[in-house]
Length: 352
Image (cartoon, rainbow, N blue to C red; front, side):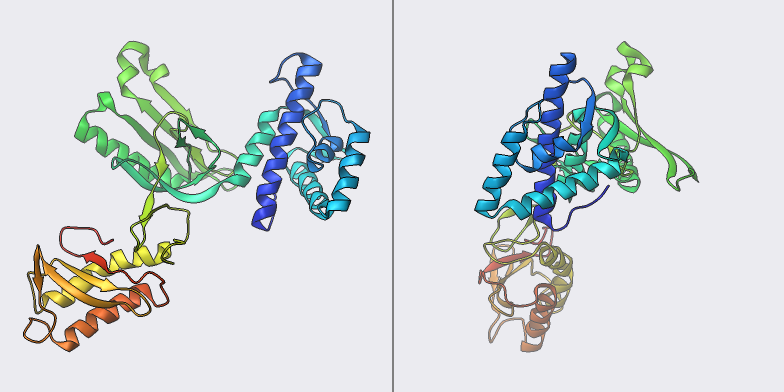
């Protein structure tokens, strides 16, 4: 599929493709009486969408000219021309372009599928604390009761399969769907893995039989597997910043405190190291309090609910605290805007 840089054009293109789908649906209703019917598609559909005209089964040249003249006056004409070119290129790649039309009869579902892929973000998903977090692509607009529909690589599907099978062992298979990757270990003529995915709903096996309880999941055109979409309660995995705000995994940075997701993950990884440094002189220490405006620095240490003295007469010396500060500095860098103070737990807790 043709990608459409920059990001705003990609999103604008996906919106235009949705409008194409609506026009195709209107034409199908007019020509066949079936809103899901198939119709012929030509460049005029792209012109309608690029002009941001309402869905109409008939190409209205007067409406199109008026819309493009208005776009020239408001300065949006170059952007609309760009959307038109991107539409033509994308549909040519996808739908066997020949001359001024796309040969064959097409359903609106094809255009919605392309739009969905363009809107998709790379993220991580989970189901509460039971499954995940797993790498996935997700269309934020494709929601079922507020839940997302992820598409996984084969490696992520394998990881999910392991998790579901462990969950079935722990909780009993009669209440858990399990995923299984059937992999021949070879590749097809296009170099793609010879593999497919099975989802087994064991709770339905006895009454409905193996055929009804088993779903074969094949890869899509991007080699990804849609597992549990519009059925399972998939949500975005979260990461937590210094100001204790939770963010969806694909959000790269907190606007409040300036912390990035990478810094958050690095801080969690650094927590055991910082704890190891402090435990040399205070084995009972469980958490520390630090400021984060500029270079991070420790301003307090506790053992459970007891505050430890970090000044003269306390268990720590300047060198040990300086080494722990340096470990925080290596994880967080400088320039964070939220001064804190913030807790970092390194015994029996995750770092926040």
